[in-house]
Image 1 (cartoon, rainbow, N blue to C red):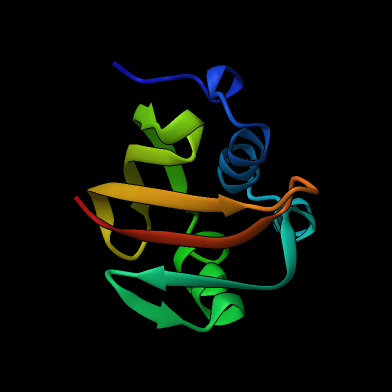
Image 2 (cartoon, helix red, strand yellow):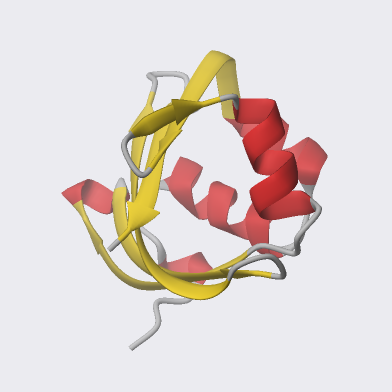
Length: 108
């Protein structure tokens, strides 16, 4: 059963999912802490290049199936125009100011 983004527990993660799904690149960037990093399938990637390629230029969309770790870990179906749909895991590190300093994703 899919969890609606409005029902996600962590405010930063909720905003992240909403920004991805609404293709709001500026809003997405405001969620990130200075120097934020990310990894895909266990490998660190260039954040700006990855989000442009995997999310914003390819119509990325997240449908969350399950959350854990206070809402900072997600199991979700992710789809974009490049790779189609896949089951994925997401983990977020959120700083005290509410901004995301790191996220990791990969196939489940």
